[in-house]
Length: 294
Image 1: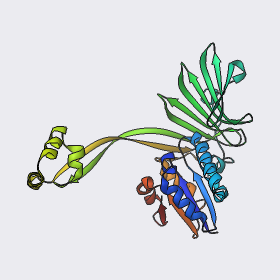
Image 2 (image 1 turned 120 degrees about the vertical axis):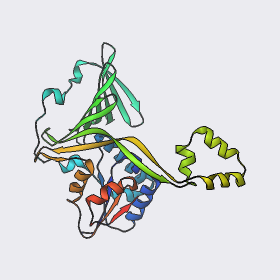
Image 3 (image 1 turned 180 degrees about the vertical axis):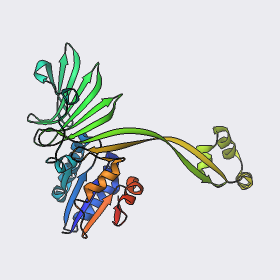
Image 4 (image 1 turned 60 degrees about the horizontal axis):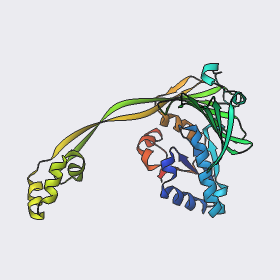
């Protein structure tokens, strides 16, 4: 079957002008268009849906894009029952409720003697989207619902960042566990004398000012007398491992997992579009697949 798949791995990629441009061009081909939402923040899937809905209001063709989430794909997979502590299912009826309206729909806040315990974001009175739980006014857990009002994702949050996330199946068992990691990586840059990076990233402010104040002739002579050199920059990199509970197979990075998900869809007639920002990481996972970028 001829089809075009857009893999969405971040909201930044979704909001790139080139994403909308490429998606609009794909719709003109009159083939099946699938948007595979593969986000480590499960609740962001709602923003993807709302983004496509906004596009569809201006161009009806966008309403034909089929949005597929990882939760849908794993709804019938075997899973592991979470402990009561891991699930931390709140009884919201035990708290005082306040209802507010926001740009995304309706917001219900639950208070315990004036302290915020939870926030339920809803599309309407009957459709929950995201439940955020708090302790001492700090976000501790994010529950994500699907279109049918069932919790499909649980993220455990520390210092404002999800550290461990569980994807749930239709029975409420965990099918996947995503774990956030950080590591130090070194980037080596071989720089010529006229490299812009020397003046912008690796020189002191005083050196940059001196160059800027020189005449063009003197500046050119100064740069010509410079020597090429190598700079090593250490940066902190965030990555995610994935554990599949049905098989206990562990992926050391999320892109290896995405490749197995894409394998479910790929045919010789399939065109695949991915964010240019992740192309260098994903391409080695699929060496025989022609990949287009947005």
